[in-house]
Image 1 (cartoon, rainbow, N blue to C red):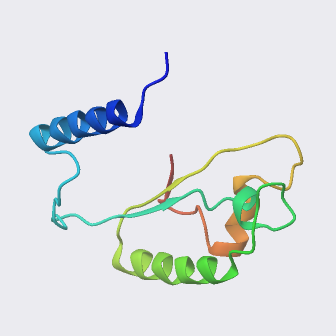
Image 2: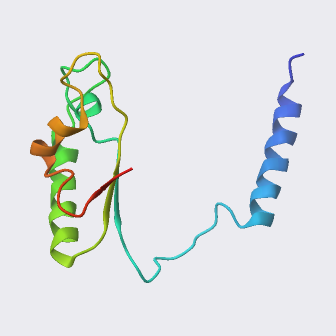
Length: 109
C-alpha cells in the first residue's frame, strides 16, 4: 500500500507532536561540562583516494584547531568512526597522523 502526500504530512505532524511532548528537538543550552565530539573523520571519508572519500583538507585543518584547543583546556574528546578491512588505507589509525586524531585520553566510540 502506498501512502499519498496527505498521509505523509499527517505522519510528519504526529512525529513532530511526539517530539515536542518528549522535549526532543528543542534547544538544551551549552551545559556545564563541554566536550568535543568528532564524527566520521576517518580516512575512508576524508581521503579522495578512498571509494567514498573526498577532499576535506579545510575541514581537517579546522578540526585540528578545535582538537588542539580542547586538549589545551583538558576537555574530553570522543571520535566516532566506522572501519573497513577492504583496502587497508581507509582505517581510523591512518587518520590519526593527519588530524592529530585519537590519542592520549581521547575516546573512540
